[in-house]
Image 1: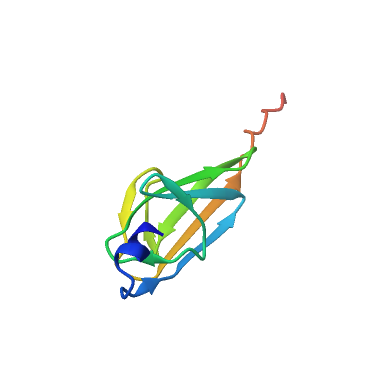
Image 2: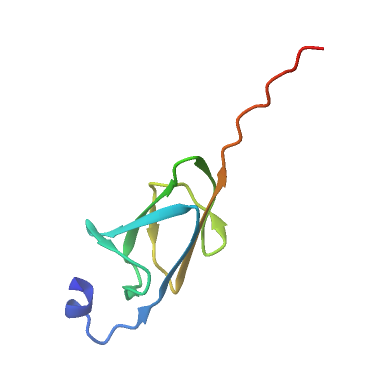
Length: 97
């Protein structure tokens, strides 16, 4: 919202988020934003992905590129975040012959 007030004629971009058994937190200037929030060129987003209980993060991408949770991303256009977690499978117990 702050950037929109400072740059009312600046073009905004879309922020899309898709998750599978995970949640994504996105912060801009310390404030949490969600999918659908207008974003602007040079916005810096801190993106953190967390797996649901019983799952572990398997992939996190930003615009199709691998991304490390907790890092910062600088907006250059429409931004799509995809976070996928997979079920943790306990190791099979060895059976005695």
